Length: 319
Length: 321
Image (cartoon, rainbow over all chains, first blue to last red; front, side):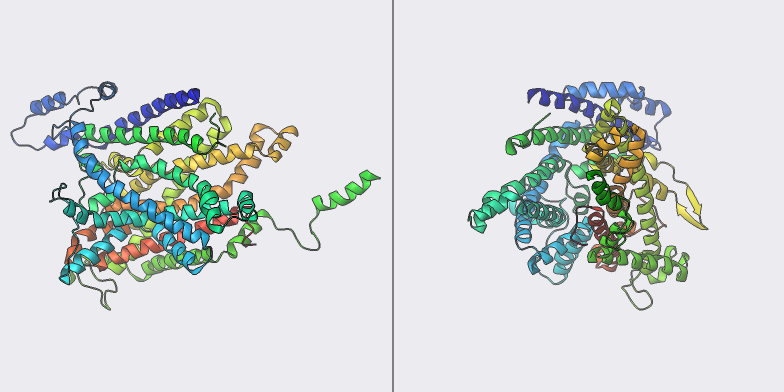
């Protein structure tokens, strides 16, 4: 067990090195931060060179990378090129808002897809199963902006036109400490994320329950006279839930990255928008900081999920 | 005597062209038969054909000028008989733009999938064939790429490649060079799952009895790879490619929606959606409803077909026989 974990951790370091290396290389060629100063009046070439020097941009790329990595290992992700704020401060400002959005959605996603998945598996090929399956198939094929625009059109634009109480579409001017306002702003973006994710999750859960229901031990449980309910909840569901828990576990670190498209449609000031705004201006420290944070969360969560899995399912051995 | 009865019972079956007077089906015929009996898959295939007829047939009837040049007196008109899907903020006909935008969206989707499948199959195949440290390096690299949220990777890569965009003349039409960039970006950011699928399928096939049989008959490593492992992975690749087409079209829509994708005046369903957001509050529903309906229709059809193909290629599936 410990040799396995230490080997995985060693691999994780290697993976993180690749991630940071690739990201550093790509962001370096993605934009020129100096272009912001290109046409400023009263700025000479010497001024620009001084700025480039103060940002460390005049050094060769490998040197910049090693320096950045060295500071990152000491918990310092550097300062933003333009706002001059530390990257960690910027992330600390945005992360709570992203977590509010994503965790709320994830709770609804898990509850709703559990209900839909169980119902449609137990009542396989019934009318309700057909309805759930077709809707999840359609939802699975939808771009999130279709759902977002549809909900906005109905609950914001039309409701406003009909003088009904309407839902806000943007989140820029409001105080997150005001709970009722926060809840109202959450309704539309959370609904979009829930609709998209539930479609995929409930399909997945349905098929894994159906697979388990066909296994021998379920037949044994039936043969020894267990009620359908006990058989389902005590035997079948526990095993069917394993792959479901795994995909949720593997999806959780990605919540940190936020939902870029949803955040930009609803003007939600989260991590996705942070990345998007700063990537467009070529603010490398922020971009690399966000990528390092999400990348390492994903890498370490994968290891945690793999190790926890052996406790939940004793049939699996680590090697 | 026993020898003779054995050969009498076994040899005819092994060599038989007919079993009980019926021709046994080849694996390809079995796949086609299972696919044909899959109603939803057929619905998907018909959906794709209808959309293809619409966007190709439409471009024969409607000239490209009608899609890219607008009549400034006809701005923001809601759907009427002369403009089925209304007009946009530049007075361009949304119906015509759907036709030409659809061509670009599907073109990008197909080429991006070809790129994705080539990279994924080659890398997965090399990892499975060579094993050892090459396998480790390729798989760690794949894992690293999978650990970056895909949209983040896509944005950075799109900005790297999007510095100077030439215009391209192809088949008598002018495209923004961003079409090629979007194809490359989607292809380079989506091969990881395929590489993993190909590799793990080949590794699990290698444990099968018939591979041991081939090995004991003296088949070389490359012979086993090319005559057993590759053909037995093809079905999986076809299925992943079909499902990958759906996500490539979706990704194109996201990238263009964010404004990093195909640049105007070339229309795609994605950038039509992106342009429509600012006119939402004016109640211009036709600007976003029609492009997104087409996106949903295409992706739904492709996904249905992909699911059908997956069942059809699965030798254990007997449901549709």
